[in-house]
Length: 173
Image (tube, rainbow, N blue to C red; front, side):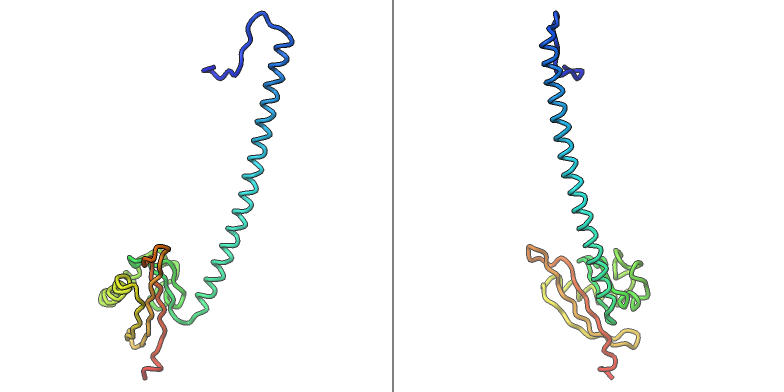
């Protein structure tokens, strides 16, 4: 049995016993194959469902990216440490990079040190207080109004921050 046997016969062989045991093992093997076939069908169905879900998620992501990039104002989503989860093309352009260059990177690395220090302090305040902050600032002769909003996880803790920044230069003149 240690070598893989599932049954044995003793001598002298009796034809009826040998045939009965062979039939039993053939029946067991057929049942195993049927069960494997059913499991395979379930797995194939699960694969199809997952592929459909993945396709829907891709479509949803494309739609959200289209909406995100339709805005002429900066929209960004950051992790607590400043890692850029997503940013629209307007925001990336204002930082002098492409969306692909900044996604997954720390956003502060794309700002002058003084600006990065101020932005980090404001974001840290949002993280600490769990309250949104609105501020106005001037950068390169352009006035911006930024809204920095906390994004909460299921436990009610701030997990990320959303940033919305618009050009208010005309209003300031």
